[in-house]
Length: 64
Image (cartoon, rainbow, N blue to C red; front, side, top):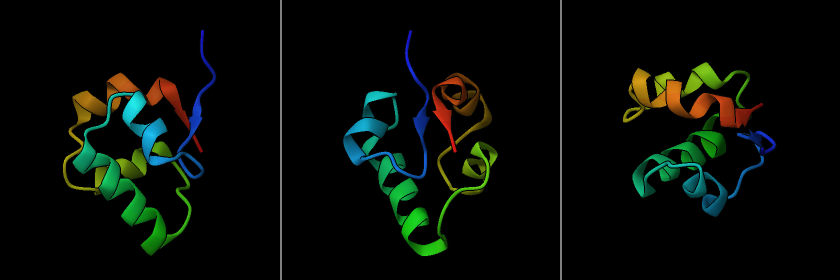
């Protein structure tokens, strides 16, 4: 059992721990810095490198 990780507060290491690559993690952090807080997990679809099948695998481990 685990608690969902808040996409808006997660560290680089925490995002890596749920299965994101170094590149994906960097893009999430850059998007967060540039655009502000995520309103929805589905916003990850707008970032290159997040195919739907991967998002389906990790979305239960994330929250906003």
